Structure formats: C-alpha cells, structure tokens
Image (tube, rainbow, N blue to C red; front, side, top):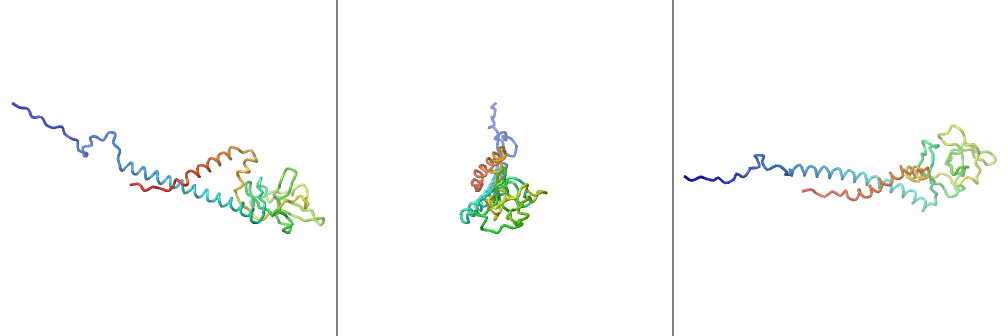
Length: 197
C-alpha cells in the first residue's frame, strides 16, 4: 500500500491567511493623501503669513526710502482704536511740511521718550495741547514746536510688534514669533505637492 502525499496548500488571499504584518496599499495611500492635504494647508497658511508680513514691511521701507518719512513704533494703546501698540506711524521728516492743527497726530519728545498723540488745541503763543484718543485727560504739559519730531502721515499696522516686544522686555513672545516665522519660511516652499500614484 502506498501513501499519497498531498502538496502543501497555498493560502488564497480570500482566506484571510498570511495577512499578519502586511500593509494595506489602499490604507497607506489614504494616509499619504491626508498628510499631503495637511502639508498643503500649512504651506498655504505660511505663504499667506509671509506675504502679508512682506507687504507691510515693504510699505514701511518703500515709503521711508522714496518719501523720506520716518517710522515710529507705537508703544502703548493710548491712541486706541486708531493706533495700537506695535503699529508703525510714518511721519514727515520735518513737521514744517504740513500744517499742524487740531486733530493732527504728532510724534513729540516727552520726558520718557517719544509720544504719539493728537493735537487738541493750539494756543496763541504757538503751544500745542495733546492727548491720546483713549485718554480722558490731556497730557500734563503743552508741547512746543521744537519738541515735535514728526507729523503723522501714514499708519502701517502690526509690523512693529517684534520691536515693541523687545523694547518692552517681552522676550518670550518675541522668541515665539521668531520661531514661528522661521517655520513658515521652511514650510512654505515645501508645500508644492507631489502627485501620489
């Protein structure tokens, strides 16, 4: 009597055998597409942020170069809602270029540095009373013409915030902004998505 030896049975994919450790191609493809979409969104946000940052910086630099206006960083919210801390006011290099009147925004040298306030009254002897829009009281002392270093001509919002953070000693916020900006520089150009096959 002879015994018949059957060849080993090869598992069919439909049997569910041999699936341990295998990667589902469809699942891997879905994961790749999801990661690609997330990367594309991050890249778009980075491009948008860098574009806005660049446009605001070009406003300050361009106007400063071509018109000779001087940028001044607002250091407080005393002129809110027109100006906020971190906004930049571009002023004429000489206030004599414009007529200073009630309602004009000026930058003058105060006891503690530059102040950006609005003229509320001009006296007969040529003194200027000033006040921040958000303040109830006028500034303690009138300002003479020699103290005024510039007349406000153009406002560029937000772009002076890093300088404001440094001047006010808020190094943590400045460092966080710097890291996020550097990340945006790295992420933005890498968002050109490759076609997944």
